[in-house]
Image 1: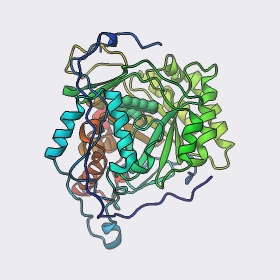
Image 2: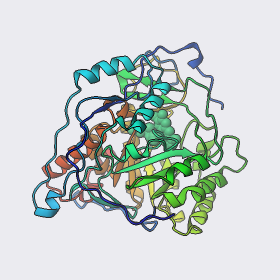
Image 3: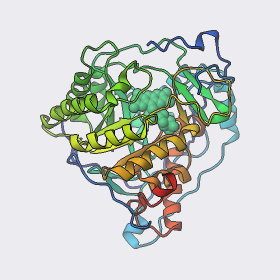
Image 4: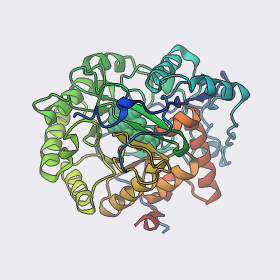
Length: 449
Ligand SMILES: Cc1cc2nc3c(=O)[nH]c(=O)nc-3n(C[C@H](O)[C@H](O)[C@H](O)COP(=O)(O)O)c2cc1C
């Protein structure tokens, strides 16, 4: 079932005012944490080019671990989308400022810190689904609206994969202010993922470690939910079953099953939590995998922009290979990056838990990979890893990203952070005299090389 072009929603300034927190639960590492468990619509044509600016570990036990997002309705909500004042009248759009945490939020945060991380995240999704989240629409303005890989984004701030693995809260997520949303990863068959516990919060580092291992309800269930999706730009992260005999075929199968309800799809060969998955990033394996996925895509009534998501732990030579193979395969964009196995940047040296690290400590590493890629290819890039503020989103874009995504920062700042970052980005672009976000892409790349 196809959809017509993405609908840019105009701002609704009214609506319920809420702000959401996504605190993890602080809890000490249990004896089990150590080293176990690591067993291991189409709107646009696929393709498109990035706008370039013209201006210029260790693995181990955590002192503090926490539950994933439990959510809390509180004070201010993302305030709908910015009206296109600038576009309509040549004036600068009004950017409502974010508000600090309310007393209610702080109370809720403290309460939620007593919930197991994964349980907390499940509750957060349930609450969102129940309609307790922000009620707005994507933040947009003449500066923020941008075309990436053929997709018209109201703003370049997206939700990263893994937050809503099973597409249960799409209606709510479409109202949080994000310019685009990626759900999944979905695999052909449902699977449990790794044993619990498998999610930790590293509070003092504003980070998280997860080793979920593609737990999801499978492509049939997820396709059913996607079929009832709301408007907006929605993509699906494609995964492979752990016990699959042909993982490359799994990616193509999920794409084929779900494509009719999607605007884009992302081939995820970069999760560190499925044994040997990252081996698919090697030149020969990646080339064969992408050939299969792109053939499946070409056979669709409406081919999608297909993105490739890579790890932040690749060597220089591997990054070059990925760029070449992605270009040869004619993917539409590269998403850089997934979580890292490195523990660089963590202030808590007692961390020994295995899994993928995300959040603030990942920012520099993932941005360096992004900038390197940006110097190697004209493919559009999506910058992910440690984005928690408008300044960081701006830095990723200046390093070469046409759009950004975030996940872990939502745990600390709530889903209303999406709108705050988009509005803050608009203000930074205005401050620096840029008429559109595309004009700034790559202008600060050399700072990261
Ligand atoms: C709990 C959790 C689950 C994730 N699941 C997926 C996933 O299924 N597929 C994927 O491509 N990335 C997944 N990611 C990675 C994120 O999409 C993102 O690339 C990474 O967390 C870095 O961004 P951040 O620092 O803003 O969190 C997951 C991240 C976390 C924290």
